[in-house]
Image (cartoon, rainbow, N blue to C red; front, top):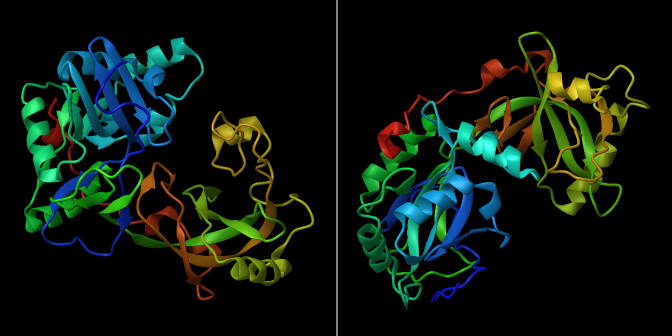
Length: 353
């Protein structure tokens, strides 16, 4: 492979802001795997955000890039799986599997798509030093004849339309909106774009914590919600605390600590069959490997309010942000019913059939 821009390339990133800034190019914030595609003739490599190749996990995307992308190019974009009008991030996670046969089966069962939103090189020419407006024009021309599952990601400079997208696209599982300065070159690894993400709050039961990697202070709080059957399901964590606060939390939660897991709603967290039937913390997987997933059980008597962006199935998609304790709330009242459901939006309107 000999291209004007060679792998690995660290993708340009975005920093969070509270409102959509004016005077920029706006795109949907896709909830998938960021990927930079390098194509040189019959060779295709899918580079990830970490620099490790994703090529072997998405053979159908490789085949589509060979059909639909220019002969020699470097394209920044997102690998997504869309089914029944929504993005399915959990089905993307299933692809990172050591068995090629399993990957191929999943590729046929739940094929992925590639959303292109930037062009770093075309033919023998590097485009990364050009302003975004010029790169977008070149990308639009290069993908004029592309067909699904390769798509040109929708973009606009209309602020009001971007605000409409921010509201409408959430129902299809999208994260929010990304704003990109039109005069900016491509800056690998730098947070020079802006992202506005959806955020809501929920009252959750605190049922345990993990210690921080630095020592016996709180690393993350384990959160739960009660389902319709009255079972406390593990839904995620909140983890962003200053070190001083991590030390304070150990003392603050000491009175809730249990001497053992006996009687705790998640007492069976080490049992594989229990992990399969309920959402419990600490289940080993190919993602966690040999990582220490032990945790400290707490009596589920305290409620905290956390901010979250959106749900992925029955759990929070990302780490939540701690807001404050809710001494006025009863743990049993912390159920899934409180979670806001966005209006459904069919991705077919964006991606086609």
